[in-house]
Image (cartoon, rainbow, N blue to C red; front, side, top):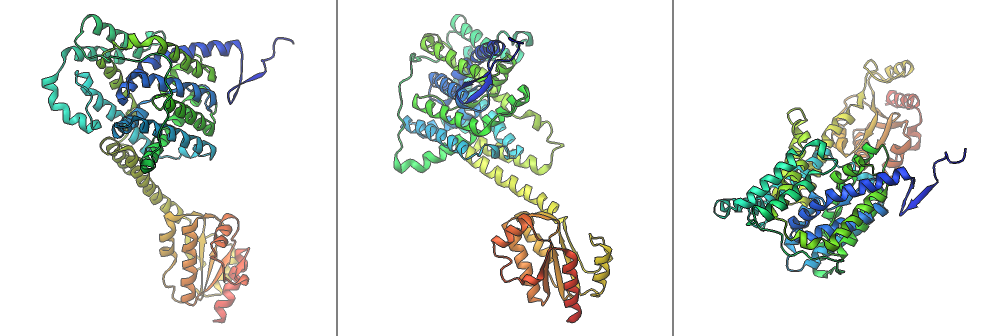
Length: 555
């Protein structure tokens, strides 16, 4: 019947979605609500980065708009986040003499994200162990809290990141601004205790921003404020790429790209779980990369998918990229006339907001489980968190991934070696058929069989050679049964080659049975079977046993 069909799908950027009045209404409300939440956070992140509040707004506009248009998570809202701000703050401190180099790093980071998406690496981000993700996210939360303690008490942010803030703590007693502390306490109280029934109409960050600013204007006027904030359209900032500094630029860009990708795709998973949809991870990386490149060109903070803003958007009805793009356009409209208002915002207001943000970033859910969680995973989490806070994020993630890899390899070794059995007598527990057992008895212990079941990798390669190898007195022939071997990597294949050579040195005649599929491809590709007699390779284990028994009896 005419008028009852859903309207045809419409294209918006790279997305295809069902466009109708119900969706549009939700997107408009979701975009407006997300913009309200994003405003105080963007200002706070801009100040925390060391570039200035307007940089936070420019970043929210650029990343928010272009990631929505070109990204792969329809309901996601992007912009500056705590983790990205922490890394950007370090970059700004390292390149304080030439801020264009800092934005060159942001530009390169965006390019790398596009490359990640083009190479379809998005799915591999989900392979990052949770203990590593938990560690660096909790570490970033701790960094935000440590750095914001100084402006909370009315002191300027110190150089040197969290360690610099800790070293400045003894000065708080002499330089304490009680008015700033009063404002910060008010803001922090609102962020924590704001009634749930009011959150849908006035989100806590915006309520805290309004209340704190009014308190600074009319009650605590002695608290330090943001000061001069430029307004209008941003000027184009061309990044510079000095050749002699290129390794440093690429290192910083890689950190931003990896962190932004992980941050965004984790938020995409959150959006999927709420909307019951499925995002395109590679397209999302491309959209985030474009947004960060544009942010670099207009002097904005780098950003990523923002969990808080995304959840607010979805709960308010946002379902398509229109909501994310609208959120950015609303912020742009505010930027054009916001400067005079933002100048009066006390630093303590933004500090109070960010203290709650940092607290929420810490993975308290995992920390509450540390007494029940595996000890080795907990250790990886704490090491990653400690390195994030006191060293740097690159080192933290690299060490965390290496330690997690070692732990994974250890349990993989135990798992994989369960599929290895070496048998000489036919009476043991084995997959042998009755006919094969009868045939093996004829060798009177002169034939051993090695069963290789499952997958084998570098994790079990060394122990594989130790478990199967060694002297086998009285054995004249050996059968390697690959019938149930699914996969072998290079390390495991070379271990098999070592075993074959060892058997030959001990004058054992080798036979191979049931080798096929990926295991066969790997062994052939590495030349392990070069020189191995073709008549000693059998498709069926029973045939290999007959040939081995014949050889053993003849010796």
